[in-house]
Length: 283
Image (cartoon, rainbow, N blue to C red):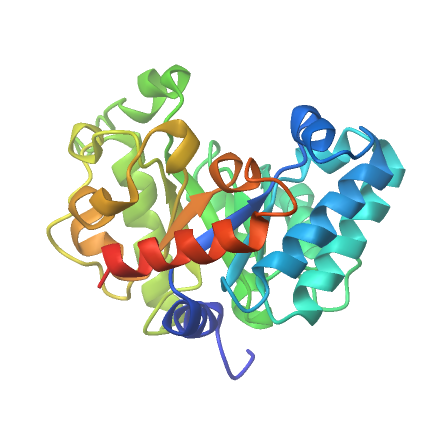
């Protein structure tokens, strides 16, 4: 195991720069607004500009891999350059890949995104536990060994997820979302770091209590929370602590379009302003 786990590095980044996580999402319309071509070269230039603007102003960036993947191998080459630039700039990188499988397949996903020296190396990845948190044993083990992190989808804001994530486990009476959080907490306890390397994705636009999630008592070890939904999707930064309660202690406020729509010339100012707002909201 590495000397410093992902949780400690995440806490240091939040302590230095605040809890803003800047998305790198080269949508077609944003590329057009930025005067960039809708191809791999445009996605590369877009990503590198976001990295340059975020460096020193935010601690974490989150490339949405799908917007690079749509350009095939050229898109992945562009993403590799963006990932390397972000790491070189001292930013923590969460690869938003949402992979999930079982056995050697999910292990291979973990090796791609979490192994040191990989062309796709990130500090953490988003991952799906549809087959159960136990199915993620390989990536969990790798994350602990490499000082990397996982953010497991637990309660998402898309309405199509409600039926599944609200479903009740017949043995425990807990919602599926709550089972995922409890299982993640148990895995973190086994690893033993003060802030676990395993986090969860919780949408900022949903009623967490309606998902059976307790926000009144902080888990031990602390669970990092990646919270999309702020800005363009409607959640207000000033409500972050009220929304997440005790889970806000290691919270990442994820925002992409609301910041990226500022355009390349105003991007640095937009990130600085948002980072200060997030810091004030979570004091």
